[in-house]
Amino acid sequence: MKDQRHSGRELPRRTAIKRVAALAAGAVAMPGVLRAQQKFVCRIGHSEAVGSPLTMAFETWAKLLNEKSGGRIEAQHFPASQLGSYSQNVEQNRMGTIQVTTGGPDTEENIAPEIAATGGAPGFIYKDDAHVDRVLQGDIGREISRIAREKTGVEFVAYGEVGFRHILSKKPVLTMADAKGLKIRTPEVKLWVDFWRAVGSSPTPLPYAEQYSALSTGLIDALESDVFSVVGFKWHEQAKHLTLTSHWFLPKATRVNARWLDSLPPDLQALVRTSAVEVFAAQRKTNRANAARALEQLKTAGVSVHTLQDTAAWRSATARLYDEFGAKSPATKGMIERIRALAA
Image (cartoon, rainbow, N blue to C red):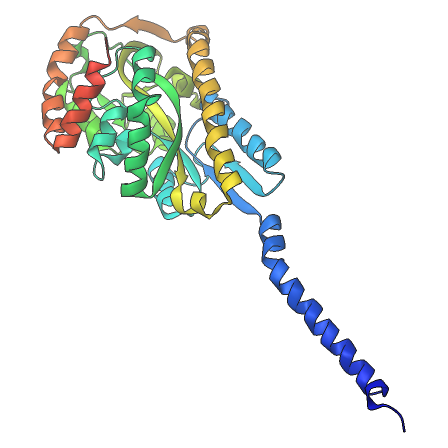
């Protein structure tokens, strides 16, 4: 009689068992394979002008993330408000519908006013570029990133900048008397509105992308901006006077949605953070080196460049804003004091 163990029925059964065992082993290994091959989409959306140093830095960073991640990160770059206005980008970033944007820490006035103080609030707080670096590239910069993560769900992984802001207007603004009643565009941020009211102007909050048309229709008489944005958005076609006020220095935090960042494998988290620090350090250097060149471009295009004649009066008129802003919380008052202490 034939041994049943070698019957024709037994061999298929053994084969089936081996197949099940192989599938089980594969299932154990599969998560690792899938994780190694998983692609993380990184949508970078912001309102900075095409061709500006900040936009070029984001373009460089997107390419670097794609290359150094071996394709595991798919960085997509959308400058010049392609994905919405500045305020919309900030909210999208908090929600995670876009993974990265950029904006001044002053945007957090309502949620974390102590952060907003490092964004130039409430005017004339930064002495020069070196003062900005002492604040943002040291302990304070790391601290506000931690606070932003806790309170807004967004981590500041690096700090770029657009530099000091000035007034672009249809008529010369040489003194505070010239600024009285001036219809000037401001961001949709209370801090900025309060500043311009303090000097007697008529602040008009508008989305970033609407400034050209607002100048052309007369909805506003002026705007305040860095020189790169004036060149990039061609606002000087509608207003031919630039007054070098340096009233506000606007750092731009590279804002990464914390949930998305935490979803990355550790090596990609490190890549995002370290590469951002490297790229935006270079951006700050480029920005400062090219500011004079952008100013010359504006002069060549027919813009008259003026110097503010009564800076002390402007500082005096806005000084009370420090007390008012600092009263929001002890942490806010303390932050203002720490920033000022680093001016020397």
